[in-house]
Length: 351
Image (cartoon, rainbow, N blue to C red; front, top):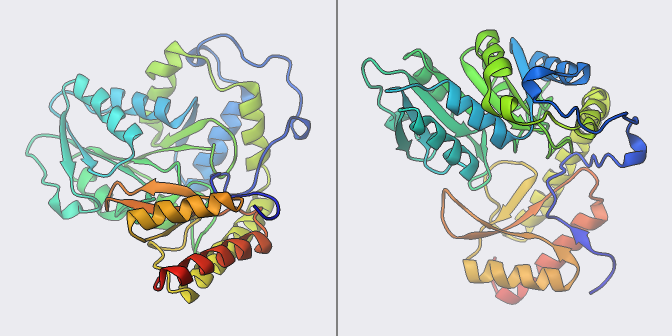
């Protein structure tokens, strides 16, 4: 192994780490009461900040994306409603869909990113459940079409945007990544009729989740959501980290700009090596090679202090060699990865 280890396995995309010495102190780590009985001022402010950035009417803070999705799917789809879930959705979404089925909703699966295959069923509301961004094909879900299909039945589009939140957002200024508000903002959608869920644990480094949407359903979640009744709210440390991350929009714009530069630099280098890079520019950079090659390359990189990910593709099958690019990666880190891959591709004889 040569030099220091370079980690391409962390999804802290903006390079925010929140060491204990960077956060304000707190008198109690947890309130010790269910979230429904008491929401702190900081939790209210976080919810207002995230919802306002999206143009949504309201927001509520939760423990995690899994907690939030379970509450959404346990409350809104009712008996005989239809829940259509993307066939390649992340497991958390699939588990949440089962919560709706327990209430009598009818589950339907539709082919990945194929809204044309979703058939409305007369007299039944449609709730469409999808990830905002797919790491398998590195593309966004077709949210405009999905929103329209759900709205026509009086249902809702439910988006788990945990991967893209903090990275993608409104592109009005020509920035291909945007302001970090998420994939619905990246498409320029009116948030009406969208129930949006995302963890702040990736880009913002704060292990809690947000749910935003129209005022009435979010208000119901705040007082009736199952996990808010049966579990404590996010800890004071979680809330402090989220507050610190969200209060620096100018700094986050600069971090996204650096992140974008890192992603494009690496993609350009891989293209020069004739390596097939998956999908659109995003911090999840995947190389499409046969599974045995991906495994062999992953092992070689690790033996040289470069930590990557062997990622199974839910939508395409097989394995991909994936690196997660962050703002705090240096050009030297990226160039070291490129040099190692150049040697591997050269010995393979073809990329």
